[in-house]
Image (cartoon, rainbow, N blue to C red; front, side, top):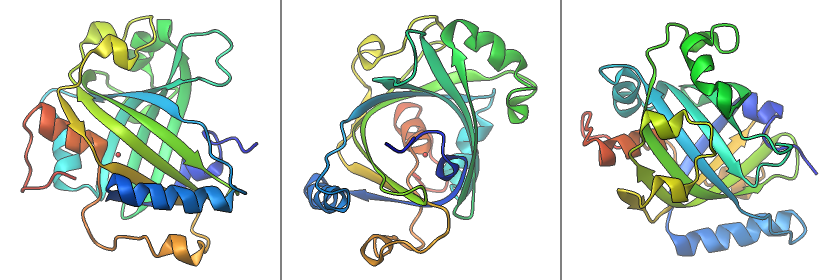
Amino acid sequence: MLQFAEGEVTRLRREFKLVIEREAAVALCARLSASLGDYLPPPTRITSVYFDKPGYPLAVRALGTPNDCLKVRTKEYSPDVGAGGVERVVLEVKRERNGVTQKRRVWVPRAQLGTVLQGGVRLLPLIAGGNLVPVLAVTYRRHVYQCSQAWRVTVDRDIGFHRVTPELALGERTLSAERLGEPLALDGRVVVEVKHLGEELPEWLAALHPGRKPAYSKFAEGMARVHDFVADGILGG
């Protein structure tokens, strides 16, 4: 089995996203499954918490310049393969610029998360200076399709946007959708991300590229819906 989360295609890659309706997603997933020998990958439930500084500079940037932005977030997976009974999150700094995505990520026990965010210079230098506060939680269900280390496709459904308190975001207990409660907003569409290392994709997969349309971002979309953010009319992870 390929190790999805820690491979090169996670750390430094090119990617494109498209937002499709559920009927189109069924057809796409059938083709992706066929490329894996008719294997249907099991779903993973994901909870992401996004962080920002006073004045929301990261949110404003994600809304205004989605092709040149920075995101700081935690992710929790259910099931969490490899957790070994430890309640943990992965802390990520995601840098997106002109179609190239770079990630720095580190697994952190939940009991240490608050300390790491306040003084994580050695782990993730881009968050030096602290003052980060949780501003948005996003829950969704993901299927991952990958048959080589060169490219991967993720399909996200049932996307919910939630307000989140520091007590929940930085607490020692796993943050599930149930603990967050009902989302304030839902996105009934399906978000597809094609992530690759710059090598040639299968023709049918490359044809999905949406061109110059504004990129979809769960962070920007959620901030716009939950916090009423609008930047130049763009709702654009």
